[in-house]
Length: 474
Image 1 (cartoon, rainbow, N blue to C red):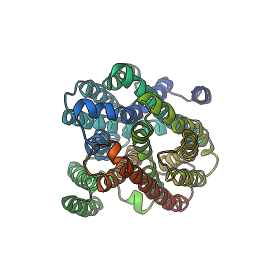
Image 2: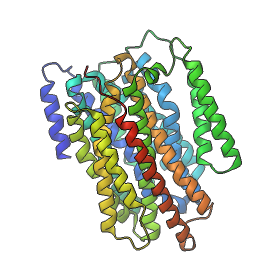
Image 3: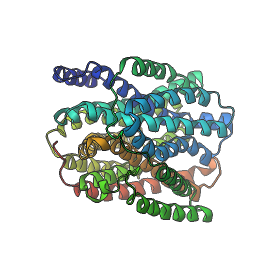
Image 4: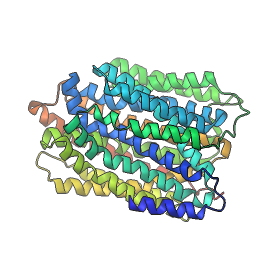
């Protein structure tokens, strides 16, 4: 946290002569949302056993409390990012904060699992509006020479949110109930709404003369929903059909978008911009191989090791703290050194940590687990900020909203794939049975298989990261 404060001061001092009057507030509100969003996404993991007990959820339904948030974010990010380029990024950012704040109230008041999942969908849409604009606003506001530091600070804020999520989520769940996880974010949301509306005067809409592609947006949202929903329900026969249909639909979407004057997604960004394309692929693979760690370990620590939510959260805080420390540092480094080198080193380190996690068993010590989390945290911290800087520095300003939304979409689809892999393995080995002492052997076998799959996936991602080429300097 101290490192974050120092870097903000340095950044503000260095920009003082050319900064707009609202720049400090601008970075501050984006940072606040970058803390709250991952907190809402991750703190819920340690509360899942309590939510399951209160709302009578099985293992698959528990995973959907997390996945509904991710799926709705992934579905809406790209269209909302393009819309923000046209109508204004500040406007969409503000509306996203309003939606997340109100949906948090209704999540806390949910009387059933279905209602909770529905309002988690609305939270995901609001989150998409915030994540699809926040990084684009930062990129617009700061020059290329200092963009890496600004992005590093923002990514560090994300990891601070992840850091406090397990411990604070566990503490809130144990003392005030799982509903308090949602209530605690409301004052922060209200503050961001007030500051953004009344004190941030600048608007960014470099693509304001373009038309919004409603048809392409609807097609994209439909096929990505079908594909991702089908993937999470594998190996059911119907799910296989949905995955195939969704994949064909995505190919049709690409075909249509290549012929549009103002597409929701400019396919040429992938065809003609190697840095943009492979940086996004690297992000997709990295998150697919790592996001499930928190979900799996929170269940492992509570069901197998017998830890309380507070105990599990305290142990799981290790990884995001290390990530936060290295993300700010690596973001600044990416202003000087090529992001592909930094990111590839980071992914290689993650491979090692995932490999060690595949040896978890009933008698694994907490020390061994902490060592694994530190290794993964170092690798992730080295990967994320440089990779994001690489993406955002590779496009024209009129595409910044799309670029921000695209890498956020890659992150969320990767997270969905990660949860999908975990859910698929649980489905095959455990089925719809609840996690009880009788199913602990199957659960531990599932954990080993999942981490082996994650290790192989991340290993392949190193090659995509290295192949991207050099970051644009201007």
